[in-house]
Image (cartoon, rainbow, N blue to C red):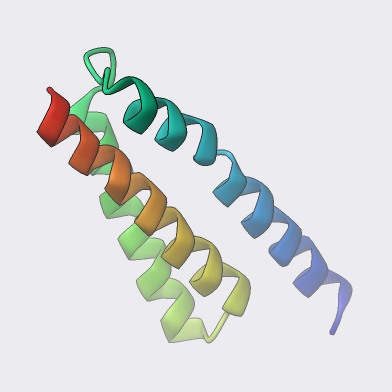
Length: 84
């Protein structure tokens, strides 16, 4: 593994971890009024595109980060739709 792979994996871990507090807060408090559905859907679409790009390139840091981020952000979108 080369340095660029380590940088990619570190970015993937940090970028994915960043969503966890918002997911936990959304589900614990059931308060999503301050969250923008449009913005979250826009970011979710971006992640799907990054995942597709990562798959095309075979870039595992992009693939793994975006799979986990899609799951986390998807749960925020679901919370937003349920709890309005």
